[in-house]
Image (tube, rainbow, N blue to C red; front, side, top):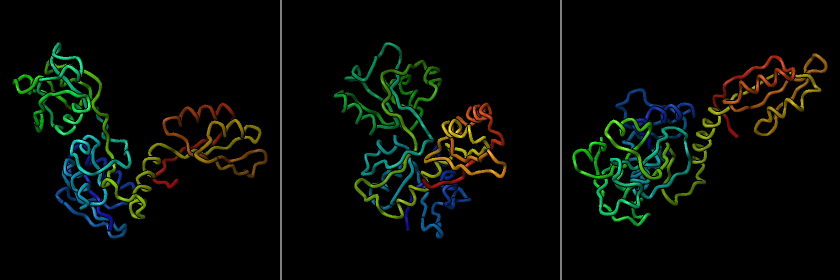
Length: 282
């Protein structure tokens, strides 16, 4: 049975469970439930603190985990990213009072406060900077005001919180993070159960990005229409009972669907329909 770690709270929790549900796996009905066995799919889910997931997977106690790239790298665990999941995106950056420093090269001898001490220590080492790192569990933007540090490193979304604290973002981003699937470093990926899990998750990602488009078009316009809807392999083209017309079916990116429908209509296509894709295998 495949043993999978899932975030039990925070910004990763609900999107991860929703994606697993779309992939056909059972998910807990009670948030207090810590372990759930999905016997039909031969999977056992463990709902853990997001920060702990990389540790459990890296130790080999669990086969696979869903966590943030930032949490994975900060943990220092023997685990590696094997799939990006496209949600919970964030940017990790340095910030300080205006005039204190311009980039990481100016941090020598300073103190940096962060909730991601492992990640920051590694980043400073990569740039050859000798600075002190203070670990805080939250609200790091107050560390400068209270004299704990001269610099902070934290997740930045709009920057409003930092500006309200009189701080500015400096230097290049430390890390662009998102939710990822992780596996113990060096563990074989050809395990059939692991491959099945990854195929299901990939199927959800594709299904979210595409819609199925159907339309009728005159035979003489088929090549121009197919150029607009090439599909992933090739569209399906079937003759209609009405001579001189064919029906076309193809997957198209959902973000382009309305534009493509307009262009098909201008070509003379009619009965243009789009339907959502709930799951797929490619």
